[in-house]
Amino acid sequence: QVTLKESGPALVKPTQTLTLTCTLSGFSLSTGTMRVNWIRQPPGKALEWLAMIDWDDYKFYRTSLKTRLTISKDTSKNQVVLTMTKMDPIDTATYYCARGGDTYAFLLDSWGQGTLVTVSS
Amino acid sequence: EIVLTQSPGTLSSSPGERVTLSCRASQSVPNNNLAWYQQKPGQASRLLIYGASIRATGIPDRFSGSGSGTDFTLTIGRLESEDFAMYYCQHYASSPTFGQGTKVEIK
Image 1 (cartoon, each protein chain N blue to C red):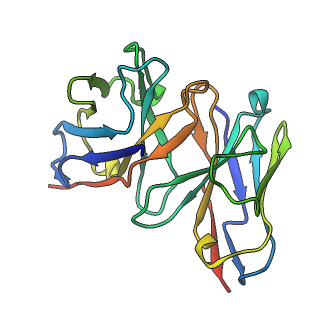
Image 2 (image 1 turned 180 degrees about the horizontal axis):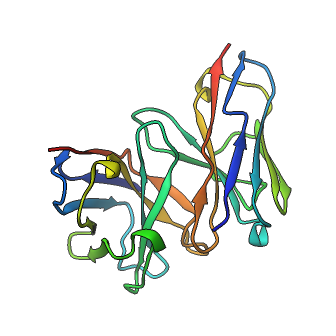
């Protein structure tokens, strides 16, 4: 059974760096064609795709946030980590990780339940 | 970037009814790479439809997708209680985007 679980701080202060971890189960990023994406959703608003990493360590970022985002993987722990610098209250959102398809990297066939991150002083 | 506009914002309906959700793209979606997802509070989102009309694994056949180019539709043939949720369309070509969602609520 494929599952993904997000973890990280519930509260961060403005200007701080956010670090989120996605723990994978039922599949491995060391397996060819596997991808993991991060998506966020501000309260009451639409989903916004953020970043993707694949089994070969290829990375792709949302253009408008590229300078603030870093995605990485730890295959030994079967985890994907997303960092976002210079957090602002507008970054308050539920952050999700999701598995990308083997043919289409951004087709999200399994999702985590998400973790709510609030940015406030 | 392709902008996806979903309508209506909220759809009030009763169990057993047929509902149709719309997703309109600002430009043609390459290869009809358009997906639909279901989202419920506290649960993992679920992929329903991809390729505009292909049901994902395990999705009941009361869910169907259609359309091409810039106009796409998700139809739920007969609403069941577990279908009351938010629904999002997404194009999954490069620089993926989502629509703003349609809430299907109980009338």
